[in-house]
View 1 (tube, helix red, strand yellow):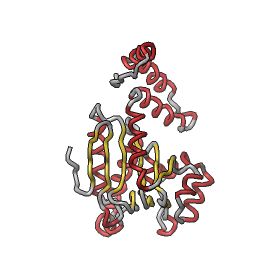
View 2 (cartoon, one colour):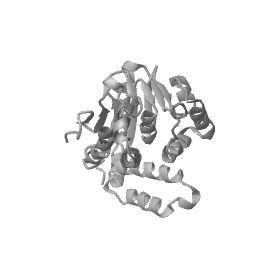
View 3 (tube, helix red, strand yellow):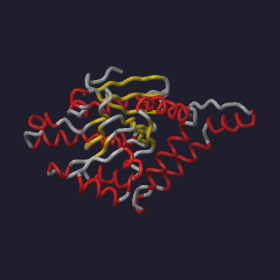
View 4 (cartoon, helix red, strand yellow):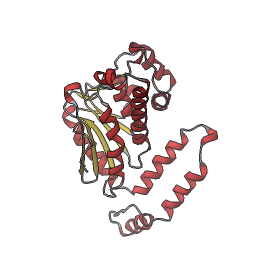
Length: 264
């Protein structure tokens, strides 16, 4: 599908859906039209059974996403209605990424700041190039970070590191980010895409229903005890055992061949 805005690029490459933030002259800072395009692109990827993994990246080699495009704030946030429209668009974008059934990977090369880090935290995995930097400058701007985004940060790095990130509002190196668990892997810049593609190939070769079930059940375990939906998890698990892919996996194992999974 064509992207709703030229500042977002949607590409399908085999089993990978690439969503590219295409505003390199502003370090891929996200404008309102870009936020609004995110759920449309994700929905198109999710509707395609050939797409097994969604990768998010920034155009160019300087930034993943360096935050929201503050040059639009005077126009987009000049009224209470405008502020609400903008906030709603960002919330929907974050939630759509986080709730995608397909595994999502943030491929980070360069700046990953503010809303850019929020986008990365909404993904399942975060791979970064050496030299990438991370931070949330909210305390330097006098604004409050959304509770949902704060929860995602705490889920990933824990409360102590989350407080350090918020309290200092400083930029963290890739070594620091790796040490606190903010990112999963670090690669040389010229190896980042190849390593990301290799991981995508591994994921794409596995049973889609099993991968999706693992993602959903892990996400359920992050909820408060009273909100954990055990019945929902049981249904997902039962669907795997009743699937054609489970039969294919058993047969392929017995026949000593690579299984061919179809997601059903």
